[in-house]
Image 1 (cartoon, rainbow, N blue to C red):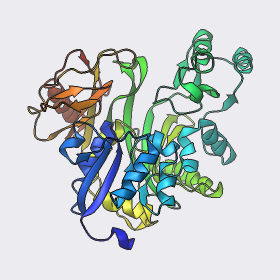
Image 2 (image 1 turned 180 degrees about the vertical axis):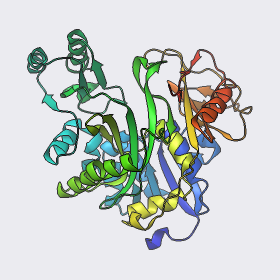
Image 3 (image 1 turned 120 degrees about the vertical axis):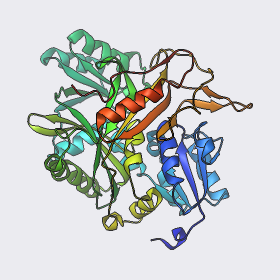
Image 4 (image 1 turned 135 degrees about the vertical axis):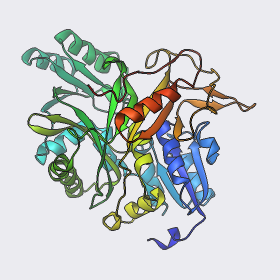
Length: 430
């Protein structure tokens, strides 16, 4: 353990304002070693656990200044944007302990072409893809291939830069969205036209200390806005963990570790971009075996909301061990119960929606149910109001997925605001 992080009364800063960051704060606050917990910028939920700081997550220079001025001992970076902007590098340059990968390592998410080329060079199973920065060249490629295919913006697009095209018209529309209309800004200047993979999808997470990886944990999330996986692509409408046995068992776990996670960590070291933090692999369990859909450089949202409640370890200890290359010495303990989380959104999300509505029922949920805030504000008179598209994630554990989802949905019904919406089929196993 690093001498400066021994003992208690540590000042910890969490960067971000979503439900993932509220969950991180909820788990970190359970550590007896926390002296002060601060969140930049936070939300109404994090305000109940620590002190919110009015600095946006992408305002990386002011975050660095705050860490130095307030002598923060340990910084935890939640979202991908500050990682892609080099916040971890800036803190390390100032000899500050930080949980999260460097800008170069974060390219595994922030630049999909980087990840695809790394996987291709190291025989890590993934869909075949072609990379284009010229719209007309991409159109000509579409004429030579069959649908369905997947169009991906190369850069960050808040989880919305991926379009599965079932027809050529949909494929052309997706290209136009990225390269002509520039709806994702510079993130869509380059696109990947990728092989369509079919099968069940799972999210797999591991703590990585630069060389070694921890035991892994998995979840299943729901990205489309409507029941039955219909509607628009979103940042996530719900999740459950662990996946059912057919999707996650010791055989599948070993296969993913040996063929994907460990080779990826080795490849990043060989590339000169060693990875420290949480590595998230979005995988498709195809008939040919697990294949990578994408990597992310942080915990998922809403997966964090169903994974972290299952962790029995002290999260702060785990993160510090990760940062100082000691993850191999950590024995992880996971609650075997199933955790189900349902996201409540503003009506119209992910397109047009209104905010500023008071939320009622927060004090009426069951004591064993967690409500993690995302798009919420605390007004001057103490009323919690909506401030974003994804507003709350309601999470409950149960002995099986049926009992967990039943309890979660019974509590979803207690939370109300104008024009609220949620999927009704999260955790519903055919």
